[in-house]
Image 1 (cartoon, rainbow, N blue to C red):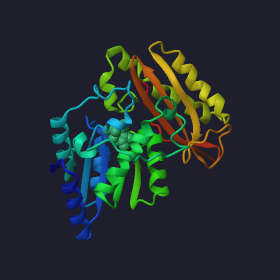
Image 2 (cartoon, rainbow, N blue to C red):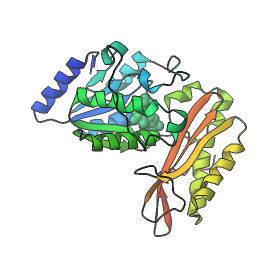
Image 3 (cartoon, helix red, strand yellow):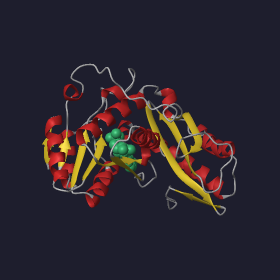
Image 4 (spheres, rainbow, N blue to C red):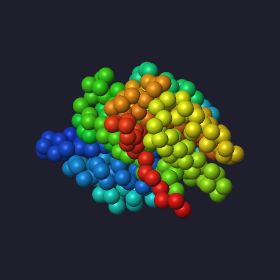
Length: 298
Ligand code: AMP
């Protein structure tokens, strides 16, 4: 694995590989790797000749009161972990390399970026769309891997690629979870002991909502209420939102339609840590198929 800090070097390497008729994969990250990140790298490694991972804590996707300065970092550990996964290029640009001067150009994806996390983080997806556009432009034609854990981000990126005709194939990878169901996240490092326990409420709320649908409930507001009640019962948790929406355009739904992919998505503050999670599901022939593991009772 080579670690590169400069855009020109990454571009040259990717171009050379493509000229030889080989394929390129890109895994954009903000580092502090966990099994979720490593699964993206592994999935990319299995399907492509060159795997490039970017590690960049992008300041433009953080709001002024958010955790940019505190965001966990471990450059040495990340370098070892990526090398272990057989990554070819670790791209670690400085802020100056990515933004040599304040950008006058930004990318806005409307509608799908407005609801859910877009309500409390109105500038977040603009920052994401802009930095992802820059990464696509740097790496060039490739397959890009994103986690379903950040489902709204995945939808924003898919829409960006479609609308602007990027020569990029976007692949969504299922959420990797801790044994107790908590979705892996770099931000889980902020949780102190009793908060870590309370944080399982996100998974429990999603599981209870899916359970209710499996029992035949098709009214989205009643499904939502199951999750709301569970989170209200956890004293350390503060609900930001829970919504049932269509998976392709994140439009809210009233009734769950057969054969349509939906997602139930939520954001919860546990102490001062903001956590998100979701489950995608389809109702087909009366059964609910959800992208959520069933845990064995402890
Ligand atoms: P981040 O470093 O948090 O920006 O995440 C980098 C990529 O890893 C994004 O595409 C995330 O959606 C993905 N990711 C983060 N956590 C998980 C997880 N638990 N399972 C699968 N993918 C994840």
